[in-house]
Image 1 (cartoon, helix red, strand yellow):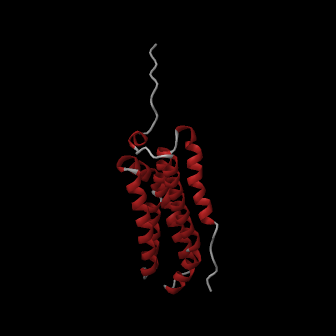
Image 2 (tube, helix red, strand yellow):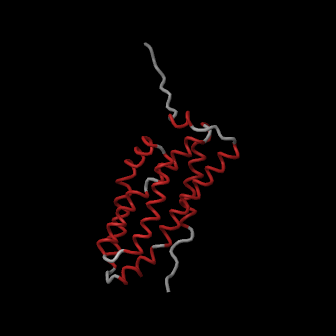
Image 3 (cartoon, one colour):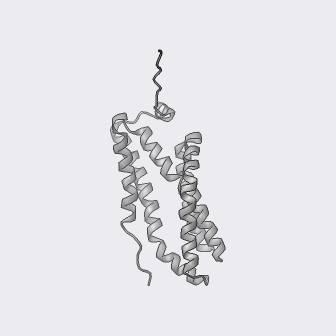
Length: 171
């Protein structure tokens, strides 16, 4: 019986530039900060949403629906965004996700109706979730084979650290 062992290494790791330890650790650190900033913005903005919904004469129900819009669209889009990151590259998806995050915040500022706000929240969930699979994939591509889980854990710790500032009171 002839058994063939498959190489499970990603194609991206084979074509990734060979960074020295210092340069790779800097890239991983920056990726960690990107995730941290995303989560900081997600957590800190929540009290401002309540104030914004009051300004557009919407109640707590609309605030809940906007939260559901983001929370529902994110896990539905994540596998597709991950596949897209595999197809067109992790870096473009990470950059698109960060740009979408910025655009969503401008959208929240200029939304004049509850419906527009909810649609923006849903679209933000679709496009910003791409940052997580893209950054995780980049970390896996750049990390030494024997330290991938550690480097992915380091990048994902940015998510937890980003939540630390938490919602601040709006007065």
